[in-house]
Amino acid sequence: MDRNNAIISVKNLVKKYDDFTAVHGISFDVYENEIFGLLGPNGAGKTTTLEIIETLREKTSGEILVNGYSVDKDSNKIKGIIGVQLQTAGYYPNLNLVELMELFSGLYGSDVKPMEMLEKVNLQDKAKAKYKALSGGQKQRFSIATTLINSPKIIFLDEPTTGLDPQARRNLWDLITEIRNNGTTVVITTHYMDEAEQLCDRVAFVEHGRIIALDTPDNLIDKLISSGFERTKEVKKANLEDVFINLTGKEWREG
Image 1: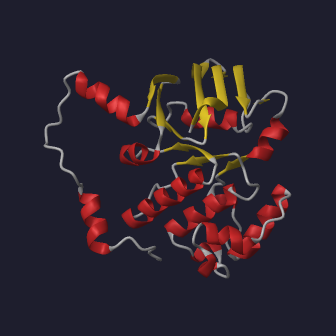
Image 2: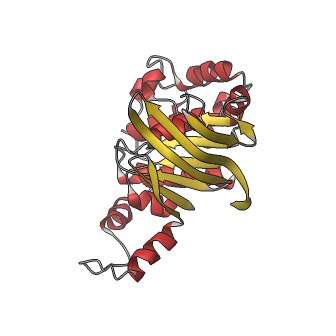
């Protein structure tokens, strides 16, 4: 993580829908090569904020720069350097994974080798399988592979592990960390605080369209503890999910 280089800079972002204000003048930076978490309850303004950064939605006011490009003037340049996780509804269920990779690389104008992309997310053995035949974890890994097609500088992952079993979730964490370690900045939303604590270098909590806290997970936890907060139950060195993974193994599960 390079704290000297803000690859995304959001200043005083406002988004209004008629007389409803979804985003109230928020400001934050995302540093190059970090995993940055945008956290908050449903309706807090997270998705709206991300869609504006991704140039998918118009802002009301404020300034956003992505790798130095303005969302107002350079939206096509921004689209060329970001990867956005496509929703599953966008897939053709009867195409196999190689065919889908070829389709998406054509849409992106990228000349990628489908098998290489599938190997990045450990789906090479499913190359000839139809999308609809994949398990939940496999579908999520495939959707992450689609974000990597144009070799982006930044990828956006919106609740990537929702509905997955513990093995698939932990393995997706490893995959996301590996993507960052290979030089890509990752912006993630999640409702799982253990996930954010494990993955994110820094997190911003959004509530009613405002950022109410922004720091590293460790600093936020230490600040809460220093305020006198105590958990009612003794904190152990492992949790029940660790027991589950230890008993049942960590290999990819299919089905």
